[in-house]
Image (cartoon, rainbow, N blue to C red; front, top):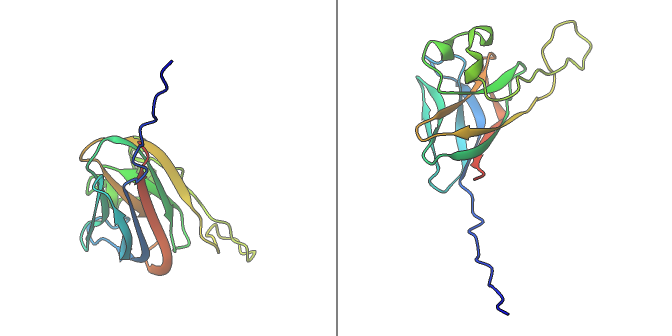
Length: 157
């Protein structure tokens, strides 16, 4: 009887983590920007930040990915894929649904006011299939910046 030896699998995953929202792109007016790169590990994802286009997470390796966004702004947030300039500059209600890859999160007003904006940060997460060249972007309607806004994306398989 022969016994096999388990082959070690490289447990290191490719991922990118950014934080500190820094307003939004000037053309893609609903796409966030970030001022601090916490980590870039591996080569499956490239990160670009542009004053015009906002943050872009470019997929270099096809696979299954997970992305999480926690905006510092007090408004709704989601994660979008392959949006055009016009789509990145429009209200979410006009965004094609197939471009939205994460649940749209809304916060709640804990202070008791009558408007729907949150007084705490909301988080949205998506697990999705991505192809080479897909561009993932953080989307929110709130304009501004915040030291706590974060975005992370990781290749799972």
